[in-house]
Image 1 (cartoon, rainbow, N blue to C red):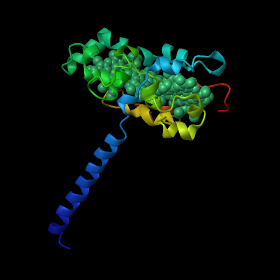
Image 2: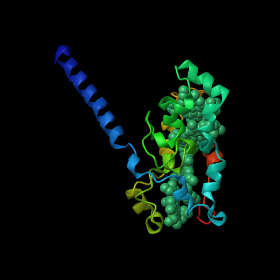
Image 3: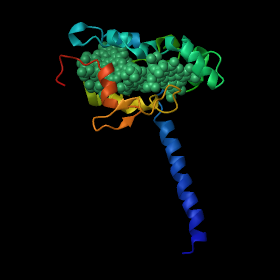
Image 4: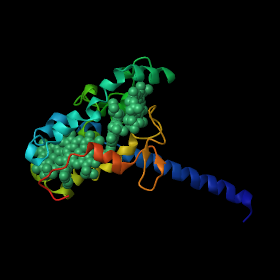
Length: 198
Ligand code: HEC
Ligand code: HEC
Ligand code: HEC
Ligand code: HEC
């Protein structure tokens, strides 16, 4: 075949792949109607003998991601992209607040922007998996929307779109410089249940 007849075909195949990707990413968007807020999770996950995930989260940077947007360095970062007040701009809140669900406008009232990055940004909206008997069965929990493993989600926010992104923030075991290294980042945020085998 002559290349002139192949060219439109290549364009068609190319654009179909792009289209499929767009459709897939929309289908994979967590459903904002199913958020319940971190206190609902905390109702069961705040006992010390099972790891008090609620307390560890509250002490983490993720819980402070909204406050962070009021700092002078945040204002400075905002100015560069035409944002006056980072705490009211979707351009920042899409990653700094679960309430925005990775979008530029508030997607749920069940979580306040003040709560920052909550459980459900990583584990998925909880409405259909938070019953005790469902939670105890991973297969059922995943069917109800639990994202497992939660590592799937980190790079939706930890990427080069963040004004704070430093492509050499982490050094991997084999000496490579990367902007995000799951293993090292996980060590800083982990909240395991000591009663379960690792
Ligand atoms: C009614 C009590 C209850 C509520 C509410 C609840 N959980 Fe759980 N959850 C459990 C129990 C029980 C387990 C199983 C033992 C464990 O891992 O702690 C569990 C397990 C988990 C696990 C581990 C799943 C696995 O297969 O390894 C995650 C993650 C989790 N919960 C997140 C959440 C999040 C996020 C919320 C809020 C949206 C939530 N839970 C709300 C009781 C609850
Ligand atoms: C694509 C997601 C994303 C967007 C959009 C985003 N941030 Fe962030 N922000 C992050 C992440 C992730 C971190 C944690 C540090 C890192 O790994 O880059 C962070 C950290 C920060 C910090 C702490 C500084 C540091 O180096 O740790 C400030 C300040 C900040 N962001 C301000 C802003 C402002 C202001 C906006 C809007 C103009 C914004 N961010 C938009 C993801 C984002
Ligand atoms: C920044 C993302 C992130 C946030 C926020 C977060 N988690 Fe997790 N969580 C993880 C990761 C990663 C794991 C390891 C297992 C996995 O990959 O799913 C985990 C594990 C767990 C487990 C299982 C513990 C075990 O040993 O099996 C529970 C229970 C849990 N999280 C509950 C919560 C609750 C409740 C909140 C909010 C109060 C929360 N998490 C907030 C990322 C997160
Ligand atoms: C919804 C967006 C979002 C998701 C998803 C997310 N993060 Fe973050 N993360 C942030 C933001 C924003 C900050 C900055 C918080 C601050 O300092 O104000 C941050 C900060 C951190 C920090 C502290 C900064 C540092 O470099 O020491 C670690 C560690 C971290 N995240 C690990 C993770 C891991 C591991 C996952 C996946 C399991 C994850 N994050 C998922 C938005 C997110």
